[in-house]
Picture 1 (cartoon, rainbow, N blue to C red):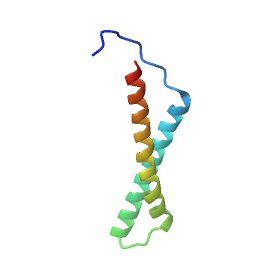
Picture 2: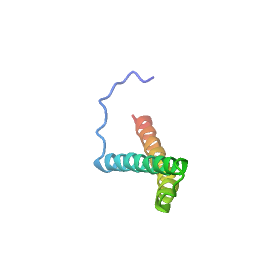
Picture 3: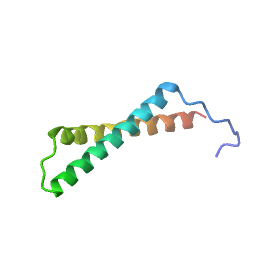
Length: 79
């Protein structure tokens, strides 16, 4: 560990919005997935858009969050 301590770096506004978008996308996908599972369990037929939202948004949000973690690691290594 380095003996030099530095103040936390300010978060870029663009990356902050990127993180919030990833979080909102993940929550939306999870809600859609829950709706699909509950409606299938109840014997209904959910709107196919819920399936598509779950299949596309959840992996995309995961990749976006991974990119955010990699960016924070590279910033941390530069300190």
